[in-house]
Length: 274
Image (cartoon, rainbow, N blue to C red; front, side, top):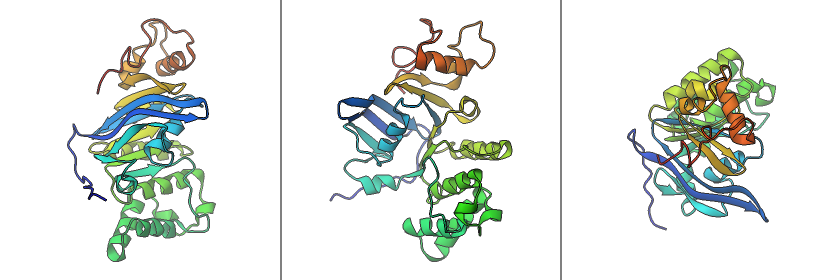
């Protein structure tokens, strides 16, 4: 097998995550239809869509948990389909539900993740301490995972995703279950991490997109219907809508409710090349 170089640094203009022509078919049913996705270093991308739109399927393909029917995926310049192990070293992933061994303490689980990532001795201990501090888990370190609140389970999941200081972060509902203060802290951390990384953030909370995302993609029925900045998305709301404008636009894009010729996104509207 040819040697693969993993890039450990990036410029703000470098595309770290590239997916082209991504499709997934289950039998004769298409879950994803030809999605193109490019995320640069310094971007925090909000990945939006109603239930059943293909959002989770897309994220599972991008992270290598599901093989696409068609398309190509490159992570930090490494082909995920031909060099899966090397490509998976480039990203940190917070899946839905933040799975972990329930009987392990937070500290034990993070030490296990550090070992799985290949860290040993002092370096492993330093990595664990660093992520515990970064997501404020000091008071929870000796509690078993099964006794944690949903919010602290999400924090522990975020900590393991940061263990190897990845260039790409893929986060599925990262603030799910957090109280308002915890949400503020995690959003601030995502903003900080997104300054020199590519971050893909799956969320149902449009307020979160406005708070932390530099760009948003909306998919519906397996296809991209909008690709642009949060402010561009909000601007598509009709003039008479003065409250919850992004919510209104999301409904227009995913249900057709109240849609006008000026309200469509996607490749024929706002998306374009990035």
